[in-house]
Amino acid sequence: MPARQNQGCAVSAAAEEESKAKIALNLLDQDDWDLSVQVLQEFCVQATRASRPDRLSNAHAAALIESWLRFRVQETTVPVLQGALALRERRGLSLWDCTILSAARTAGCHEVYAEDLAHERDYDGVRVINPFR
Image (tube, rainbow, N blue to C red; front, side, top):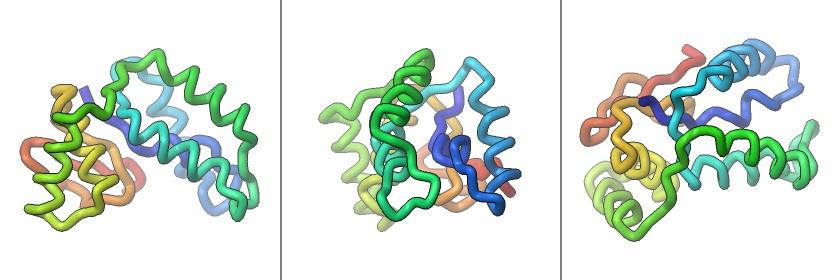
């Protein structure tokens, strides 16, 4: 199963992100996703950010997260953190991105859908797909 990192685009009301929102909503209509707690946290931070013109209330973001709990959710465990730290040491990525990749690997995912990482790059058996390319 693929893992996801793009929920934030699904709620954007920005005109320049309209095509991304459509793609993200279509992806979220599928039922075979895995998410990580890290992805859900990043969604909440970005969607409710004060500087965001179309920011969501905390209650709205929490309701969306609740709806996404229909997917399998990989918790951030000590082994996930250790995998993230090792990946960070080897690849020099942010701890947050490494945590997403490590959680995907722990969940048995072979792909991560992400806009922020290099498209088609393989990180220890987890390939990144940018659905907006």
